[in-house]
Length: 102
Image (cartoon, rainbow, N blue to C red; front, side, top):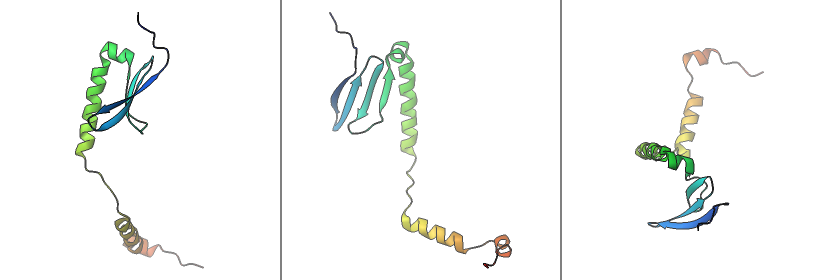
């Protein structure tokens, strides 16, 4: 005889060198890297209907496209240089519309 799943069960799981938390609940399961909040979540209804395979394929393709894009990091020095050069240079239209301080 099997026991009914009435509440969530959490277990630690090691895949390769990374630790994960697996939560199995009556609604589905969730696999999250240990110490994080976001991970992969699947509902039991999606697993049974076959929608889980479609969702996994979609997420995998999104992860691959995100990994292919280089990360954009702004260094404080470049951002500061850009902001000072933008504020000091004025277009011809801006030069004629500056007002004097009273």
